[in-house]
Image (cartoon, rainbow, N blue to C red; front, side, top):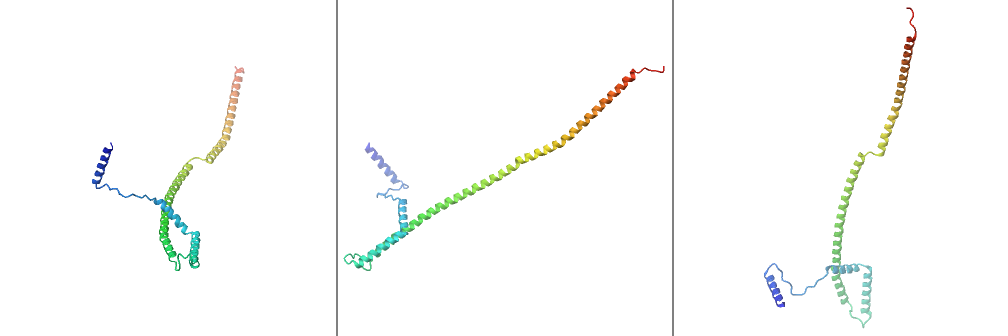
Length: 206
């Protein structure tokens, strides 16, 4: 089984090499570098270079270096003109400048991302504000068309005043009609009584 597997793998490799669009793998070992980790370390170092603590430490080291190489004759590892110290400063500057540029690039990337987020947030806020303005306008129009409590109260008061004005007129008319009907009945009774008296009286002159 292992021989068959090796044969199939060799055939696959040969077919892959025959194809021009298939890249050939590198024979050397590939080192994977975490760019984000390197950027964080470089940025932290660049930030430390711009602090007063670093300046104080560097000043103390330079003073001790110069004093030891001037007064300590047996310990002079870098006598005047301090060539080794100058070399250390040159090496530090050579590494500090790229680290500072790396920190600036990372800060620019963060600023760009934050600006894009602020732009999106501002556009969303503007859209929400316009939507709320339209909703408030529609709500005002709808409220203007709906009858309110004050409007109903005013209409009821007007109806009440009209009823109060009409009720006395109707009461007076009923009284007048009642009086008229009573006088008519009395007149009928008087005429009926007169007719009865005339019938009861004897006829004379015959």
